[in-house]
Image (cartoon, helix red, strand yellow):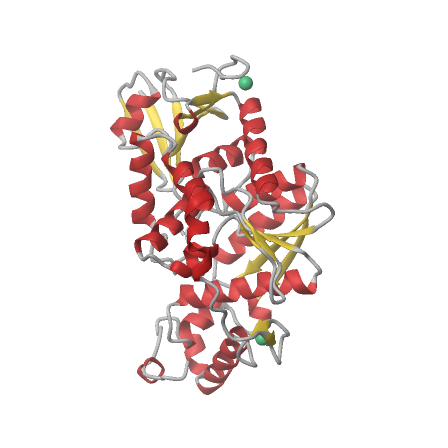
Length: 65
Length: 325
Ligand code: SF4
Ligand SMILES: [Zn+2]
Ligand SMILES: [Zn+2]
């Protein structure tokens, strides 16, 4: 199970599994540079593998005002 | 992915530049882009004092940190708009940031000058964002002038600039197309206005802010009806996705070939500017627009003091039909 927290929507989502960051981004309808993908204080590139138990923070970058 | 330069695991993938970087090499890349902007467009000259407009968002704080690391003489300016909850949160982020990094900061409180934005919204019958923008620009200019700053820097990034250029191109706004860019030279008592982050995308400034532990103010203004140019930004994100590098090519192409082609159009200069009778800011109307706003708000506040305690009433019919605003 992978837990995903989305900013600035402040939404928490869970996914059974996703192999890579790119798959997760596709699933959420995000292009590669639409959001920061953060795990444990580091940024992940699209090819990064996701592991069971991962807590991922997604920070969308398009400014809202 | 591995870093293009040092082969360490990459943290930032940049398809637009067909590359990827680890955090250290990304920092170097980022600095190079800022230096390139400053050098190519002579944004800051040796020894000049720079006033940096700080909203509390990622772009402005990123700009401030980067310019200070490049050892420019920078001072932050935050305009506290006086909007309940959101303004104090933004201000706290800016103050905390400047304190942490030992950076100089000026704060202008609009409430102290009789123009808190909630009152502007309540008493002035025009879109609050246009009045708010005008008031902020007024204070940026005024603090720059009064404080002896030669340069006023803002955190506009490539996405902002491309979206704005695109909107003005759709209108063929010759005035805009003749002179906009990362540097507006000082004139008529205004400081030079610069945008040192214009080569960097929103994604890149967000990466920089994250990698440098910058806490940002990201809650939207309660009066914001959604971001300006959001539709255009969306369109450009798709273009960039399918053809990486399109944004910077469009913008650089404008600076190189588009702007010169329009340069001759503009020379119809407006009315002569003189210092505002009240605040000294350059204006063509005796009393500047912001001083006139201040008087209008004060008069209407005095005429209808009861409305201050009635937050649900946004505007009244007599004000909406008031032609003299
Ligand atoms: S969204 Fe809020 S802060 Fe921005 S211009 Fe409008 S009123 Fe001012
Ligand atoms: Zn590297
Ligand atoms: Zn004035």
